[in-house]
Length: 249
Picture (cartoon, rainbow, N blue to C red):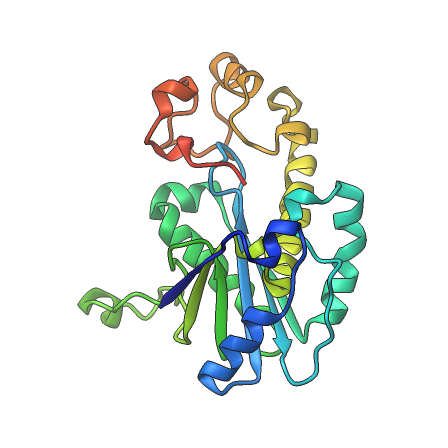
């Protein structure tokens, strides 16, 4: 696994995206189908961790400069782009790891599980992957004896080259597309859940650690969709360095 750090000379500094890194990865590994992944919900108190995934055919793909980091787009614009991203990519998927799975596995393994589920939905599998961020949580870990003996475990992680790119959703069109798919699907889940649990305000905060969300947890207690191993009611200062202090995305 290797990484790229974006800088002031990068197109991301002006808000534009390109296929430059996708083409470089394809050339480096002599491949045709380039995958890209981005996550949303890592730092939330409630709801799933969600991973969006796209696969493009580098030999038959057009530039899609309208793609941006999902956080820079309005909700309406993100919704509009979902169908276009699905038509642009030769493969796409969105995978989730539930709050219960986050509690059981931890954040890194839950990300890997959600990412593996996203890839399993892709009509064309990736031959190499661009991953947003600085840490490779997507590659399959080395198996231990227990893994080899357990036939009933869901296999998680990829066994293809993975290149991490810091702020990749701001510079790579394939990652930006993945971020849009993930954001729209997870937001929809949280809005739907808020109908059953209106007291938590998930239609607005999407499960993240707002003051009103924490206050509701204190008064009502956590729901089945909260990450119960996390510090759900502490202040942001008390959370510093803990799971709930992870930068929300």
